[in-house]
Amino acid sequence: MTDEIEDDAVSSGESFDDMELAYREALRSIEAAEYQVGSALREFVEDDSDQQPVEESAFVSIGEELAEDLKSGSVAEPRLISDGPSSSRVSPSSVIEAALFVGGDVALTARRLASLIGQDTEARVAVRLIDQLNERYSEEHRPYEIRLHEGGFRLELREEFAEVRMKVFGYGPREVRLSPESLEVLAYIAYNQPVDRTDLEQIRSDGGQAIVRQLIRLRLVELERTGSRRNEVAYRTGDRFLKLFSLDDLDDLPHADVFRFK
Image (cartoon, rainbow, N blue to C red; front, top):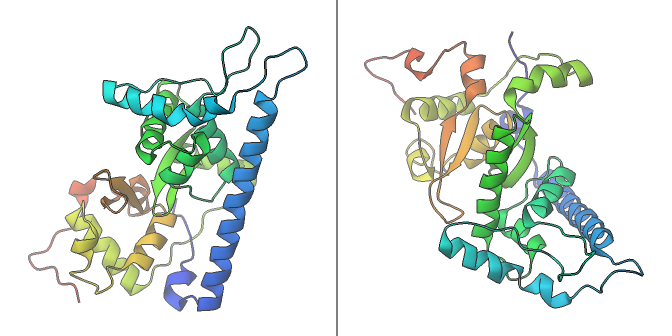
């Protein structure tokens, strides 16, 4: 079955007004997600008349506790409020899970997710917790996972459940239309993966970042982290790339003695 997704954004180009509008919409979505998560957490940890009061210092110390756990090689799930016989507890991983759940299609960076846990929490703590959440999802055979995109992390349905989504929401198959420039970048990544931005600059002066972002949105290319810094990433083709081109694995890619890129 051939999927069909139109790639009008890359082929026709976006005006600065459209880009600014999209940026503002993304900011509003992120702010709305943060507000919902914050409100939900406050309601969850608010004490009833028979509970102990919440200590503000307990929220501030979360990052310090997690940093100590990272040094020891494991990340614990510290409490957001002080000990008490009937006090409620929210774990940092639950905060991240809730933020990604209400965030929808808006990608949230590790730094922003860490700030929801505590003002002194480092981004690497959020990344470690995301890895643990994905491990748990895999062990429990959950139909979703947290994926890294160009702009941050998103909670998404696994590819093997795509047909279920189409049956429920009526998303029918559509033909994939890629511009020659998009095909060029996709082919380069497919034959040379993993590649980074420096590699892509060999075929396009700007590194083809707009095209790469579009390929990531189409799930033809995946982003993987190669280091601790945000810009230390590499690009690979994903499972959907193989499915679209009817390939069992990358060894089935056609080869030629000379493969030229403009």
